[in-house]
Image 1 (tube, rainbow, N blue to C red):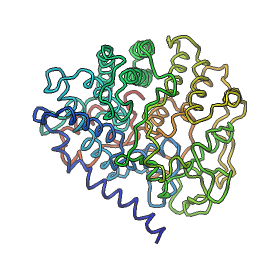
Image 2 (image 1 turned 30 degrees about the vertical axis):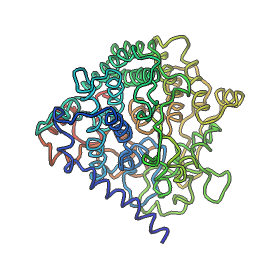
Image 3 (image 1 turned 180 degrees about the vertical axis):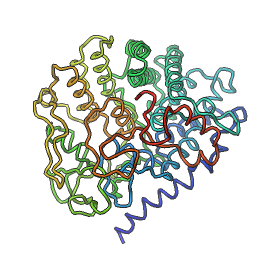
Length: 517
């Protein structure tokens, strides 16, 4: 009976998510005319913002559909061990994606639009500080969605029209930069003050932290587009750094979890759907990384055996003993169900800012005092400390380590993931690989950001999948995006046509996004 419940519970979640968050059911809610939104009082604005924060992180019943079954697997933080889940073989399960799309537009966007409409200049409760913070959160909310699909409904959402036009990804990115710059400028008058208080589940209303967060988002976005608009990217990145970005772990952005807003990764970790990937095993063991026990648990029944498996095994292969849940490492105790109401949900780490500056310095950009090596090593140190590893000697030994990822003694004789050590090299391309391999580790478990960076840079050099069920994306190819959802075809067909026309290729998983051309 216990095993039967483990099978039933995740499938029930999927059914509930699909019934609650399909685009077909929520189109009217998605495109509600903002001019008809009811005026919110102060308490209503705070509660609406708290709801928008939680729901925008794909944790409103559809985290499994957005993160766990797609980005977590594509960036190889984990590998699938559930025989009934095919997305690790690049299969685009339409209903799952439909639930992820609808969960965002149906649950996160309405309260966020309500806050923005009420607090904007001339709004019924005009408040420049709240409007700026909500605008920053809008960027945070939409970034992973455009990085999943490309062109999406953005500027026209909430206009009350029967058809919602899609914005090109380039237009969305350029607007992100404008919004972040203006929001930071508007918040300058409120430095040292508190806005929203406990209704802000990330920074508890600390305006100074929101300024750092916005500038780091600006740096992230600028770097993402550096391959297609270098001049704009450099100018925006340098301005963001000059304005101040996340620096220490006191600046980290986490969503507080409560009895009403749990950590979904911890909720799902007992469902036997995913385990450590072979990529993680190769790198963590090869580098003797002290974060391994912070990320993952030993194989059940052992005290110090960590094991991962390759991504993309077939249903039959997943039935083989070495690929079963009990033979591979689950996540560490922090991410188990007992802690789903206590372990906060990551939004952004300060370590990311240091790795972004390291790449910028490697490009010759002005990232402030320091070299690419300095920023790289600071990124490693900040990540280690974020995971509770504070011993300076241990951090220094890791940073100067000369060991490399290991080959695995599994059924397919998996080779080492790469040959680069942790110690910063002298070759620019190797340095770039090192920066992004360490950044990949430091982003765990934020797979949304890690997958975007992997597609942009090609680093780390992740393994080919064992099998692919997608004719557009062979096992040795990279899945570049996810296709548009059936809900849009049913309820917003004309709008969807505008998205496809701006995609620059076929509506499939092989078409590259704008910043990845």
